[in-house]
Figure 1 (spheres, rainbow, N blue to C red):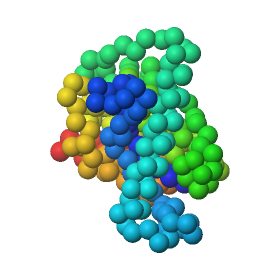
Figure 2 (cartoon, rainbow, N blue to C red; figure 1 turned 120 degrees about the vertical axis):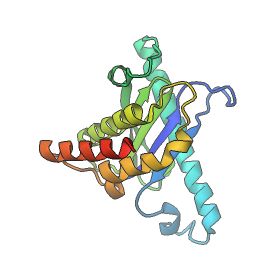
Figure 3 (cartoon, rainbow, N blue to C red; figure 1 turned 30 degrees about the vertical axis):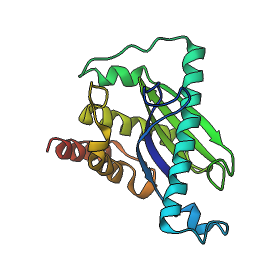
Figure 4 (cartoon, rainbow, N blue to C red; figure 1 turned 30 degrees about the horizontal axis):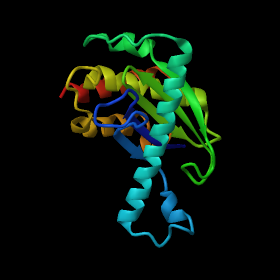
Length: 200
């Protein structure tokens, strides 16, 4: 099962310090760790929400660090793409996996799959037994739809105003955090459904 999906910045933003990452969108699936753990059982709903926000921010920070290291090691320069060239940007995206130890930030060990597309990071946090190849395919599919239909790479793109459309994408491509094995016919059906919704 996928624990969470997030979109965050991976390049310096003027309002943030050098090592920080801004979470633009996050969606957590499954039971809340705060409810299940004995230590956090007495937390109020607001305290649980803050704890969840801290965990998501910690994931974004670790992924941002991994993307930065990957980009430095490869020595490639990031080339800004023009609107309509989202597929080219996705092909040039950096990708990888970060193993998150138990307790940092979730109570059990998890894996964070990430795609770094220019200044944005797209991340899926999966449970340790999850099929990482299937998760990568799902992450690439989600990222492609976000880039193509929501035009996230353009100037002035406001991801926060498009959260309802991202929610619909997640409900179709990652229902309740479950990775889907898609045959060709079902994948085409989903593509048509998503494209029809996004055209509205």
